Amino acid sequence: MYRRILLLGAILAVTSGIGAAADADSQPYFTYNPPRATENRDRIEVTEFFWYGCGHCYRLDPFIQSWLKKLPKDVVFRRIPAVFPGRDGAPGGWAPGAKLYYAMEALGLLDKLHGEVFSAIHRDRINLSNEKLMVEWLAKKGVDTTKFMEVYNSFAVQAKVSRAMQLSESHGLDGVPVLIVDGHYRAPGDSEDALVLVDQLIDKTRKERAGRK
Image (cartoon, rainbow, N blue to C red; front, top):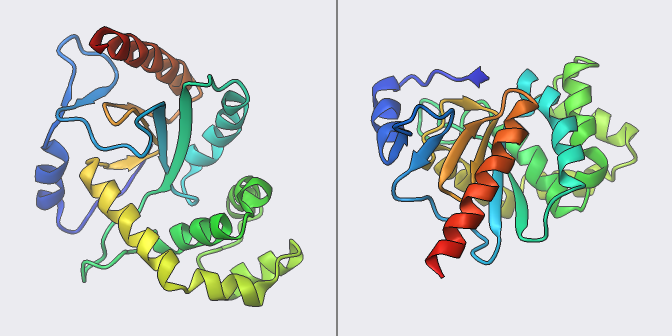
C-alpha cells in the first residue's frame, strides 16, 4: 500500500481514529461507526480510493477491470482519486492526478484513458503531473487539448478535487489503494486478494440489509 505521511501527522492520527476501528475478531478490515455517507442508497456501493502515481493501484487496476465485468446488479462501483492537503491546507501533491481524473470523467474519456494513464506513468515513466508533458501525451492520444485544459482548470473540476480531499480525510486514509464497502467497511486494496475480501463484505452487507427489512 502506498502510504503518504502528512506534515501534520498528529492531526491525521486523530482524524483517522474517529469512527474507524478494527473488528474485534481481527478481521482484515475496518468498520466505520457511524458508517460514512454513500451516493447510492438503493445499491451496495463499493468505492476505490486510488492515486495514479501508486504502484499498487496500477497493479490492482486490471483485477478491478475484470471484477467489474461480473458486478452484481445490486452493487455499484465508484472511484475517488485520493487527495491530501498541502502546507497551506489546499489540495497538495496528489491534486494534479485528481484533476486529470475528473477532467477525463467530464469529457467521457475514462473508459478509454484511465488504464492508459497508469501505463504512461508506471510503464513509460511519463510525469503526467507536469502539465506540459500531460498535454503532449493527451495530444498523442487524440484528445482536443485546448478543450481538455479548459475543463482541467475549471471551477467544476477544482470543486471535485476539494471534495475528494474532504472524503480522503473523512475516511481516515493513510494510504492507497483502499476499498470501501457501502461506507461501512474499509479493506486494503494492495493485492488482487482484496477483491475476494470485498466480495465477502458485499455478501455481509447484503445480509445485514436484508435483516433490517
